[in-house]
Image (cartoon, rainbow, N blue to C red):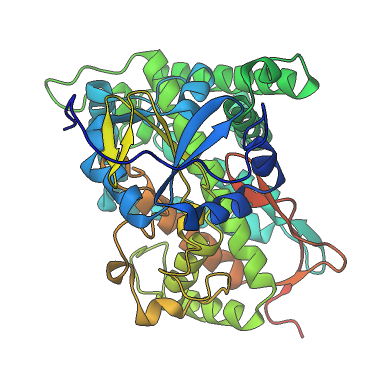
Length: 450
């Protein structure tokens, strides 16, 4: 725990700040390049978001210390404060005793045994998606992955419901577009000066409309679940009783958790799958290797079956194409991280994407190489160097769920299709709250085609 008396150095201010705007122009030009440029300037470096200071944690040691040893001294930061009015107080945003209570209620839904029960549903939905494509056609696979990931979450939420109302059944088509608008808007509301973010632009109106629509859909889902209470799905855990001392969630609390699962579970998984398919479209040999592993096992029946190359491939996707470039924390008291003094109320920024491209931890970091994990596993790395799902007591509750979903989805696609880039289309990274492809049109041909 921090003391009211603490010693340490002051964080250096990053180079290149502009009058009034601080480091916002560099952030606007390229988040990734900007954070990479901060690494040589110190383990903890101060940047300015307009006039607001923030402290970037650049080293694995600083990140590990903040997420584990100093986690009790840190609360959620500015990004989460911005998101709370729109996402509510779900497990990603809540703090303290309430967060621990909500996590305790939801945790059984993400145990390995429960996830094994979800695997047949994940496989069936992935196969339906893959079978809906036509040989030789161009498929917008980023959009397909968003729809698929949303459908998976909704089916797991409603696993015990016999039938959902039509408007809820159509959420899988509506939600992805709203999620994209919401996550983009949250980033802009976080980094832009308050007066600029509050301007009544078309984008701001779309942002508020998307947030309101998602809340309404989530409220309807909870109301439906109240009437058609089930046993064995995630909503039944939210609305039921975790133990004799834990009271049932209110409708508002369940709505907030549902929104959190949709945003964290659907958007992040879909983005990672999109990057994985982009890489595969450029590497026929990798397609063959993943397809061969998938044909040798049944991940629907045994989601833990060994697929060593697929696992290394996804591990490398989550390294080089880590979608979550921005995490934020706020000091709840005067704190020292890596011998740097941080006053109470300091905003901290952690970038998993920047950590995963650190040449000290990952030689030749911009080269995509799944086999780098043969000689050096995650356990061999410095603590904090590889955090695709976060770390410490706030590590993503759905990490195993997402991992199995991605393996199952790649298996369904690679046993049926070959993927080919579309000529003259360049896939670019778009950086908002997540780093995602700008668009991913790929031509699909049957696996046995020549």
